[in-house]
Amino acid sequence: MTINLFFRALPAIALLSASAMMAQNFQKMPITSGFTADVIANGVGTSSISTTADVDGVSFAFVARDFKLTPTSSALTYGIPADGIINSVVPSTPGLSYQLGDLSANNSLKLITAGDNGTLVFTTPKAAFKLYMLSTSGSGASIVSATVTFTDSSTQTFSDINISDWYGGSNFAIQGIGRINRDNDNLEPNSTNPRLYQTVLDIDAANQAKPIQSVTITKSSGFGIPNIFAFSVDGYTDCIAPTTDEATGVTANTAQISWTVPASNQTTSYDIYYSTNSAVPASNVNPNHSNVTGTSYTLSNLSPSTTYYYWVRANCSTATSKSAWSLAKSFTTQCGAIVPSYTNDFSSFPGLCWANNLTGGDPTTGPSGTGFSYWGSRSFLNTSANGPSASMNLYSSDRTGWLKTASFNLSAGSYKVKFKYGVTQYYNADSSGMDSDDVVHFLVSNDGGTTWMILQTWDTNNAPSNTSNEYTFDLANFVSANTVFAFYGSTGSQDEDLDYNFYVEDFTVENAQLSTSEVNRQVKKASVHPNPFKDILYISDTRDVKSVAITDTSGRVVKTIEGSVKELDLSRLNSGLYFVTLYFKDGSQSTVKTIKK
Image (cartoon, rainbow, N blue to C red; front, top):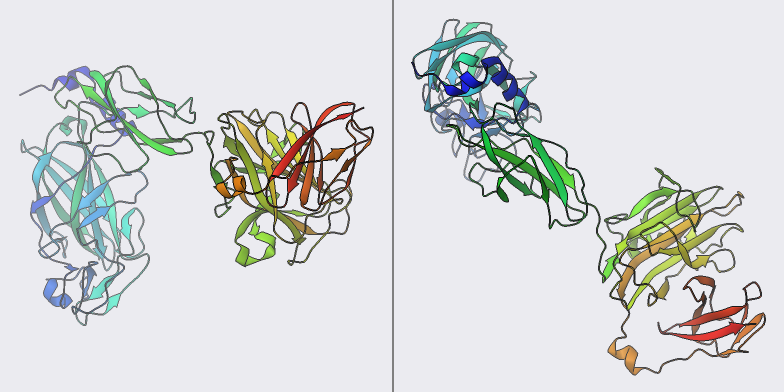
């Protein structure tokens, strides 16, 4: 007798325990002989021609998806898969599948009377920790026994195996496959029935290294008619798959993965496979990283805001050589700074790497809470033809909501931010004012959201119209690699009567270079007086002015005015140098320096 060295190094019970904790090495077990009936109607023609027997003794058989009574019959949307592969939905065995017998030949071991038996012989014997049986019972539940025969002629018997009726039982591998009446070809589609069931047979530790040659099934009792369709195994290995841990240190472009293996493994190195596809890698797939030493590895050059799945397998100095791939783990990389151009049309709200569940706080320190979302998705200006937008409903009191953008890398300079905005009543597209202590700010942060600066304010003094208004701001003074914008809405402490929506549409960060048409048109110049001034600053010509912004030497906007105004009351500003920027209706702008005494 040959002594398996693996069992000398690891007690049998420990091996079984280890296999239960590690990834399963699922393999189909195609059957070369032993089926006694064709109970699956398939192809074109009557079911009595494409089957030899029913499942339940009263004329009903399974039906395959490719079954058509005539060549012009409608294709089925239910049934046994035409390729005969059943992917189990049992939660404890993700990735387990079965291969049915030829759908055009005998494909079931059907046992009618107690004592009936049959032997299913496998095409390729395989050693296994566990043997999985795919079966069902027609016209009631039944009980069978199974005798597993190994290639050395030794056996292991399993008694009192319960097989549920093909309607309504638990632990099903597949359900909702419908059936057909062989007498009249009436189809019976059903979203949950009939069903095929999965039964697990645990191979004794002493037998796990022996290839399984065949299984003999005997009906023991019960009114039902057992039908045995397929087997699969959790294949034996002397190289146990690793157990992957949760990823750590996840950034926008990197993540560290780690894993553990049984101390008994004679591991020499590891292979790593990762993908944005959750499909389990095949055994012959090329790993992303091969022959890795140690039990951790940092994945790099990843894409931001992307979910990755990863698997690890062991390379061993034993007969099996390689383990199965581990069970999958996943992580999602963090949001990375976007290099413009960029537009969010809010067709998917709030947008990748945007946040709308921020509340409280104030415009200088940022939000103080999370959870509730005051900003939501709504048709721009309450008109469906306008398409989606971001919107905050302002009513009642003490409501503060933030809509925060993704991060932008503006280090290249010469960018501008723009968007459309407006206000309507809550229930319709009519115009509305803003309550006396309501306010909406547009803010910017140069440090990823730690500190904030107000760029624009809307309140009762300059409430937007119910038409599409456009806001544009030149970001020439903003060159941070981690710039974030936000919309801040607050209803204040007073509960007043107005109930209205503030809208934002087509948020865009783009290059501020002028187009050819903009270069060719006449450049408008800001003209203000007196300069220096004391309290009031006058604008010489306001016919084409859309708005005015006053900025201090640090780049902070200290005052904004919407519309064509001729004089600016700047009495509350401290003495010093300021920049006055006029934004014109044609999209151009002009800035002039001025000094307050």
